[in-house]
Image 1 (cartoon, rainbow, N blue to C red):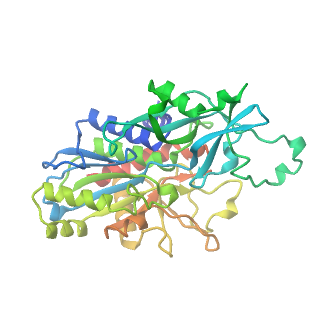
Image 2 (image 1 turned 30 degrees about the vertical axis):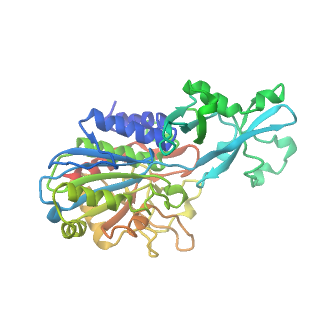
Length: 432
């Protein structure tokens, strides 16, 4: 087995164990603790030392990990990699039980982010997330993570015999036609508080103690390595857990230089980042300042450190699609396994400029990693990511990059095995 294939299989395993942002952060946290990192509580005083390894968690769904550099932080600054933990999906509403025809039990959901909705049909689905339980202190409820690790539900399609034009394209009503079917019920009693009782049984708590939840649907089937020569990763949530995985692995395995190396995993990028744990919040800026304070530095030193820093905003990019080649920019046409893409936009939906591009391209050259460029067609509006949003909070020189994907926001995206190792190599070189 090649090193690239092994690393890609590690990614598939990580994503399989991370069915929600809460689980992703918990898995990263476990990996950091295993490698000598120390957790810092946001509510307590911090003590950090040069070359020390630390992390802190916000809302159970966002994480910032860092290794303090050997140099003076006001002169050597921070080297940051930013990614996000959330992916497009469906969120379960309160009081979700709905019965159709007196027999079919469905759950009421709402769309989270921008999924390709029809890819969620006719697949085994399950539920994962966070449950809030009554605690002794009303301001500190007990928190439990949950993953119903079995094929629990499905969103069935309508037969072609009842919709002869289905292959001409169908717009799905997300309040009516995408509600997952859980099972058949015999009477009203079975419906009452079905979900709360299921959660209570799984968590071994009283259903009366469960107050609320943050629960999401996920595809039950595990991702795969596919292709004639095992060159593709077919797996959901690569946007953006692939960058989170590569960034954390690089932080753990990279060398400690003069700069302080940081990986920040935001939440809620898929819905605009305007949450306390999102890139539009002061979370990252606050943590960077607290690192400076814990090292005995002043506010002037903190501001100096920012202007000696660099941020890689690491999300995914779009590869040329072999069935829709005309959708790509005519002269910048990244392909799977051709290396990470530097993302560029005249309207600044990506932060890349000529200077930050040169920095990342030089890093990749030192690492022996090929580089591609991604731009949208001039007549198409593309997406954005955490880079420009982070710039509203901290004005650090920044580049937007990411590995090319096919089927981005599908329940099952297609990435390149070599690309995932390439991006990891570029991150290790960057931290050096």
